[in-house]
Amino acid sequence: RHKFWETQPVGQFKDVGDPSLPEGPIEPPTPLSEVKQEPYNLPNLYEWITCDMNSEDMCSEVYNLLTNNYVEDDENMFRFNYSKEFLRWALHPPGYFASWHIGVRVKSSKKLVAFITGVPARIRACDTVVNMAEINFLCVHKKLRSKRLAPVMIKEVTRRVHLENIWQAAYTAGVVIPTPISTCQYWHRSLNPKKLIDVGFSRLGARMTMSRTIKLYKLPDSTSTPGFRKMEPHDVPAVTRLLRNYLSQFLVAPDFDENDVEHWLLPREYVVESFLVESPETHEITDFCSFYTLPSSILGNQTHSTLKAAYSYYNVSTKTPLLQLMNDALIIAKQKDYDVFNALDVMQNEGFLKELKFGPGDGKLHYYLYNYRLNHVMRPSELGLVLL
Ligand code: YNC
Ligand code: MG
View 1 (cartoon, rainbow, N blue to C red):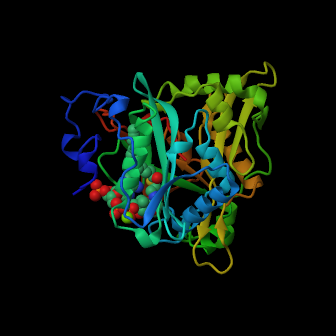
View 2 (tube, protein in one colour; view 1 turned 180 degrees about the vertical axis):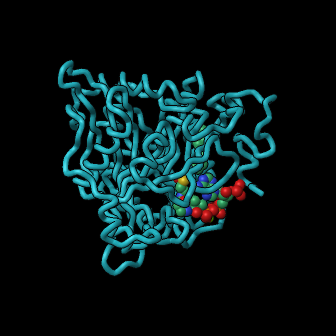
View 3 (cartoon, rainbow, N blue to C red; view 1 turned 135 degrees about the horizontal axis):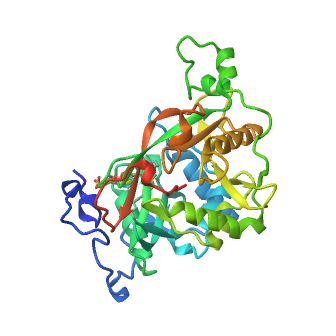
């Protein structure tokens, strides 16, 4: 049934729930000299390229490929529209490898028709911190679908990851393949209900009018927590301590150091936003929340072309109740003119979703590890990892 995935070192469906299989790497690393030195073969009309995302032209080509061909919802009403600044941020973390940003061009016209990326990350699985690649942005042009190009893209990124002596990977997808370590759900909190209804993102509830709906989702004009402010560069050590301590409770989570926190969590306009609570008395950093910006193109609407969405990223509450912290995050997102605030049911998010009027979405998000077996399927609340 999965001609490609059945050949790969991933948990297979027939083995799910078999406690006799050991947790950890499925295959041992091979000597680097045995890693294939040449790229995999592509059909003759195409060629591999390494995409230098610092180049304005290259970044624009990737942006255009993804804007027109990347992930859509099941009804094909919306398509992710990652910004160029976001792509640069997502692909340039500490220690990134340019060789893991892989494109495929048509030889004759030089047109970019496929893309896949990896970035390095230390991910803890239970008690073990593993050097991994986070794989993202797999995209094949709509006109080249169902020609088995995706397996070649995946094998080529795997080869280039192996060349850096890394043997495991983490990734998420909307599709079910062998085999999810966890299956999560997106929840959506309307900030601009009228627009969301107008574009078909949400529907007017039963026995609801537009004015009652607008009132239901109304938020205060300003945040409520004393000491709530934007994260600044000098906060990196305190936020790192807070976050490391928080993430230690989950079964799978990133192992962030100060360099990672500086990259992934310091605010960047229109890319990632982070806020914290500094106690007005002790000046201690007690709580933290963050979200990233990922608009979607609205396909075929006369009035609106983009949906402005904020995605919950990492949140930590130690003193401020999580509900209050996230309500402040919603207030900020509303101030900044986002239409919707999205969150997965990972970490402790279930503790605020219903109370803060998030509604469940229809699509699922499946989490995967490559060449690493875990012996049980995790609940979303046991996951401490958010991929972009
Ligand atoms: C997917 N999303 O099952 P089987 S998420 C992984 N992730 O193989 P073809 C996928 N595999 O089942 P198409 C996948 N989607 O026969 C499909 N597959 O074994 C598998 N969409 O290939 C599929 N982006 O080329 C099947 O399919 C085989 O032309 C079929 O291309 C697929 O970034 C795709 O949703 C997704 O652009 C490129 O549909 C195309 O349909 C497309 O005939 C819109 O492929 C955009 C979209 C996916 C977003 C993402 C994470 C990707 C993870 C990839 C796996 C990484 C493994 C670890 C590597 C490093 C290892 C080390 C160390
Ligand atoms: Mg294909």
